[in-house]
Image 1 (cartoon, rainbow, N blue to C red):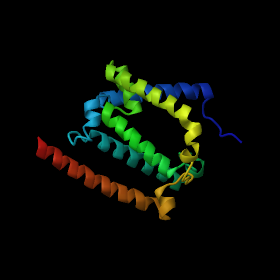
Image 2: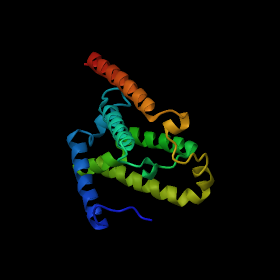
Image 3: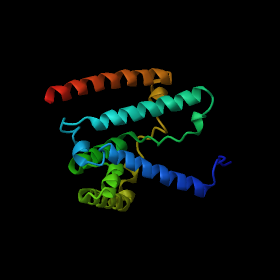
Amino acid sequence: MTAPFIFSQNISLLVAVILGIFFGLFLERGGLGNPHKLAGVFYLTDFTVPKVMFTAILVAASGLYLLSDLGLLDMDRVWFVPTFFWPQIVGGALFGIGFVVSGYCPGTAVAGFASGRLDAVVTMTGIGAGSFLFAVLYPYSESFCISSAMEGATLPKLLKINHWLVILFLIVFAGGMFYLMERYEKRRS
């Protein structure tokens, strides 16, 4: 059984493209198309990225679980990326190295490209080459790539606690992190 669509598939794709354009525009206008701002977190000079990311995570998680608790969203129908613990640790480390070297993640590389940054083109070329290399080598690394499968693991499921306790912890953690980052930034300037 397929899920009912509010719009046709073609209209849904058009809406996704329009939303993607606005997302990229907001990334660029917020300075997140600038590799110096993005990599600044690794050099302890700019904490915009973790502030934006933690805020987005908290708003999205709170909104999803609130809609679920109100009976307006069935969380069993929300798709979570399957968890493969060790492969994702390795992939995250490689992603982090690429982020530090280039100053971009894939989404911000596109925003940088749209604003005419040559380094973003180089980064996008590297992302394409890395993806191609992964596809070529996948048959040799498949057993590792599918190891340590954990389905769609979430902290509430793993810890067997209410989702609001995890969200509350993240809010307190983010608040403390934001406070410390602000103090550090003020002390440096």
